[in-house]
Length: 466
Image (cartoon, rainbow, N blue to C red; front, side, top):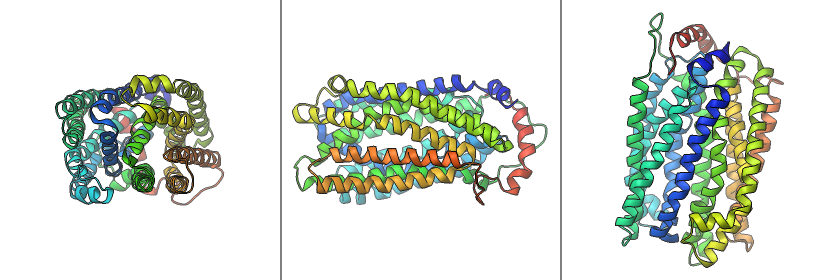
């Protein structure tokens, strides 16, 4: 019955996975192709500045938006969170405004810490995006909970198209002034989020719904936070580690190299971009797993929920392994086609980094899917523990390899491989252990949630397809 409901309101598991994976892949591919003109106009140093801004942005974006799609999707698909998106609009709208203000205020201190004055203007032009992405994430979570992955896929592609269009235009027009050129490309990101959010909100307000059988009560804030907070804490570990990594790596590399910023730009702005392409393809499997697994977990059918989780992981493995092999063997061609402006040692470095990190396309994909499965099973805190453990590990190993070995920036690549592998193993162990023990406060809804569960299901059934 749950399966039929999902198919009625949205797409089947595989159809939803294909749609959102296609959207994610096209989005990431556009982002990768975007690096061709961007690296031509900005060069290694400009790309380094560009990437140094993103860790702070990602941290604030994580706090204000990252846990929302999966958290809201879990609430709505389980049948106990009808109307959760309306409460989330109010809650995360405020959080988004606060995030925007924090980024604006921290722009100058961050520029001072990283030793790059251009970062101030970059942060200030990028900071409005934090608010708009918060609202956009709520809409995506609502539709994903209904089993409709199309709005997420469409808005992801739209974001990239606008960012690429304006980014290429601005970087070309201001190519003679590097700080202005970099700042203007980040303004393009803000423009893309404003337009995408407007389209998503229009889609949400024009959805077809039937009036509820009775006046529904607002979903308690704590019901939303119960899933979104652990997911936020999980997601924030990565950008925090990237921020720490950018500071640690550049400072250590500067002691031995004059082009430390450029080296970090090649690693973070080029190599990581390529490695993330296969991961983006498997994102649809993670997103589509939540509305498939959570109804079973809600009913107490842990065995059935785990079977679906393992199926998602097996499909992720089957898809990611061939992609990782392709990434490894096409590294020279990829570098020549996408990052043709890199020459000599930088080109050879990028090829080497891609080959080193190819395995992370597999482990990163599995970490992504397993984290979503843990949330759907009702254990989001476990993936939080995994991410924080491996984030600390990644920064520590990066610092050690850069400082004590001659690996240079390649040490950061090996550290990333190590972190993803450990995260994958931890998540797998957690999923296997689900149902074998009961932990108070985790994996079980509190009484207030259960009281509203029946009404939530009635209201969910009264709504038409999105």
